Length: 225
Length: 225
DNA sequence: AACCCTGTGGACAGGAATGTCTAGACGGCC
DNA sequence: GGCCGTCTAGACATTCCTGTCCACAGGGTT
Image 1: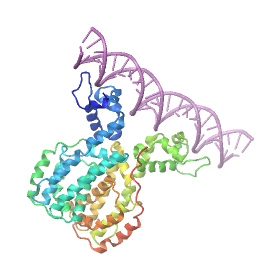
Image 2: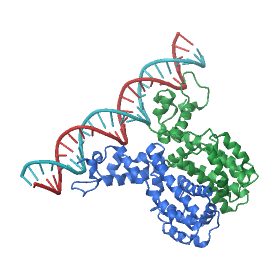
Image 3: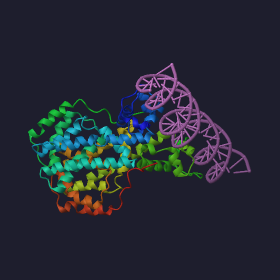
C-alpha cells in the first residue's frame, strides 16, 4: 500500500501526527508567516515530531504546498460570493452584506489571502489559482450591482472599486478600531454605490460588526525570526 | 579612513563595483525578486565581483537593507504627493493627475512598492517607513479633495478609496491593456468624485496615458528560481 | 622606487533548510 | 507469539547563504 493512500481510514496506533495535522499546521504557518515560513523543520517542531516523518506523508515540501493551495481555493472566495448573493432591500444594504466579510474573521482571513497573494508572485500555479479566485469574487460583486440596476460597465467598475479597495486596505495592514470604521461606513457606501444610504440599510450590519469588534485578527505575519 | 566614508570622492583605480553599484543592484533585486531575493551572493554574481568585496562597503547584509529602505523612502511617495498638488480645473482633472502615477512607470514602481510592503510584514523598521509613506500619500490626496470643496470626512473616505483601490489593483497584479483602462476611466472618475467627468477633464490624461501604453512594467517579481 | 590606501579574491567556518536511508517501535492480525 | 504494515527517530549528504580572515593587486603620492 502506498503511503499517500493513508488519506482516509482510521488512524493506526502509533501515530503522533496525522496527515491532516501536518496540513493544518502548514495552513496556519502560511497565514502567519507567509509561504517562506512554511518549513518542514518548523512544522515538525510545532507538532513535536521528527522532521523525517513528514516524508512518509508527503513526497516533498512542494507536494505539501500543492495541497495547501487546493485547500485554500474557495476558502475566502466562498464567503464573498455568498455574501454578495444575500437578499437585500437596497444596493446599500447589499454592499453592507459584503462588508461583513471585512469585519468577520470567520468569513474572511486577510492574512491567509495575502500569504497566497505573495506566494503567487513566485509560483505560476498559485498565480493561476489566485486569478481564478479574484475573478470569481469580482464577478459575483459585479452581478450584485447589476441586480440593482447598474449598467454593465458601471457595475464592473463599482465592483472593482469595492473589491480592490478592500484588498488595498488589507495591503496597508491598518489597525483601525471598529467604531471608527463604522463611523465612516456611510461615506464609503455613498462612494461605492453613488446613493446616499438610509439608516435601515446599515442597522443590521452595524449590529453584526459590533459583535466582531473585539475579534480583530492578530498582526498580519509574525515579525522577527 | 573608515570604509563607510568612501561615499563621496572620485572612484579610485582598481574599483570594479562601487558602493552605489551594490545599492543599485540591490534596489533592482528588491523590486524584481522581493526582499528575500536580495542576497549578497546574487548581487556579487550580477556585478561580476567576488562576494567578499561586499563586506568592504557594508558591515553586513542588514546594513545594506537599512540603506535600501532609506533610498526607497519618498521615491514613489514623492510622485503621488506632487501629482496630487498639480493645478487642475476640476476635481476630475485633479484625480486624473494622480492617475498619471498609475500609468507611468517612471512616476511609480508598483513592484518596488510591493516589495517594501512584503518586507514590512517582517521588519518593524520597514513597517514604520511604510506607514509614514502611506500616511503622506493619503494625506496629500485628501488635501486635494478638500481643495475642491469636499468636507473633511468625505475627503478622507474618497482619498482612501482612491488610494487603497490602486494599491489593491496592484496587489491583484492585473495585466490590462491601456485602452481598456482608458475606456473605464470615466466610470472610475464618477465613482471616486461623485461627479460626472467632462471630456476636457480627461483629454490631457488620455494623451499622457497613451504615451506610456507600451511601457508596461514586467511581471511583478521574477518567478521560479 | 618604495609605500600606503583602497579594493578584491579565495579559503574557511558555520547555520538553516531539504531530502534520503535505515533501524526500529507499535498495534493489529494470523 | 510472531509477522507485517504503519509510522517515527536519528544519522548523513547536500545546497545555499552569511560572515571572517588574510594575502595581494594596483593606482596615487612622495
